[in-house]
Every structure is written in C-alpha cells, then in structure tokens.
Length: 58
View 1 (cartoon, rainbow, N blue to C red):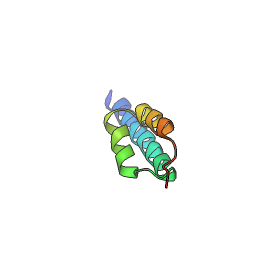
View 2: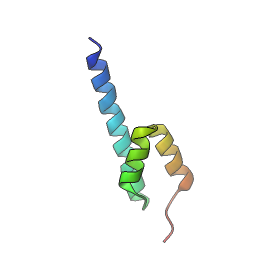
View 3: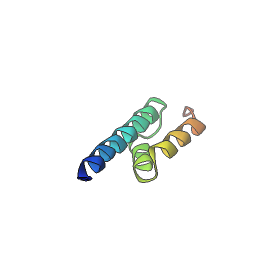
View 4: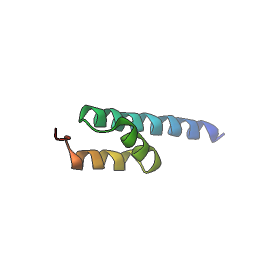
C-alpha cells in the first residue's frame, strides 16, 4: 500500500535533484557535483548552496 507513496516521493526527489543540477550547469558549476549533493543531502540544501555561491567567475 505504501509503495506508491515511496515511488512518487523517490521520483519527485530525483526530479528536484535534476533541477538543481541543471541550474548549476547554467551557472557554470558542476552538474554531477550538484546532483550528488542534492541527492545525498537534500535538493533544498543543494539549491541553497547554489544560490549562495552564485555564478562561477571566469
């Protein structure tokens, strides 16, 4: 009965991690690094770190 909730939650978690990773790539940061950060800690924490660090300087 609960497997449906876990599946939906897992898919939502994965999609949020991808959104953070694509945002990092657009700011010149590591796609994989931010994906893994978001996956293992939290997409919210990954997003906050991305916002705090901002654009990567050339």
